[in-house]
Length: 322
Image (tube, rainbow, N blue to C red; front, side, top):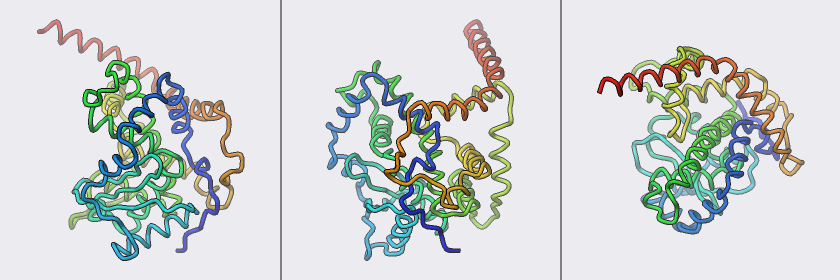
């Protein structure tokens, strides 16, 4: 089935309100701009390319031409006039990333090629292009550097001062994945494909067995809504230092957007065009994010308080029994 080209679409059309609010909050942290400048200045554009490329192979019309053609189609579907460089690097880790400062580029791990189908890979490329269109790579790159090197190996940063920044940066990083997942869906324009992508990223390919997308969607819904107060606390603790949300959470979040009509509205042509006053006041981002968080928070805040009380009691008991 032919894909609908989304002419002049603005990334704000699909960006998750929690992503925008988290990024704007991050930018408002005192010293944020200085940290960005110091890290970017220390590595530089060439240093970033050397850091992330390593032994990677650049994709061109004659080097992995099929992947190159797919990249062209992804760019055409989201109508992005620039052509970021695309690389494949040899590693079994199933991952891809859009990184860089002035001229961001995309790196796809070979493990991704081995695990996903052609259409699933297309959704991943759309996901990474979504990051680029939203201006994420600068902050993504800084987050990866801080995770990879650690603050102690970056002498121009003070560990005590940078830790709250790290937590805020990782919180935004996780929310940015919700936006990019929407871009991936808009690129491939098939919900089951994106759901199967999340399923394989969570648990691998079939390996001669059977995988059912419907079962994974049910699992995603169970993870979001199931459990007691202590489970709620554990979910928070399990994700606080992660760069990505759980794949079940991502699947459930994307499914919610699809069922809410956001996807169909864009496919029908009702979306913001680039440059058409798509900035929007910051207050709108916070209001939309408050609505998103509010509904979820009202359902769990009492459980969370109970869970914290249980956690405090457990720690106290452990110290008494030493």
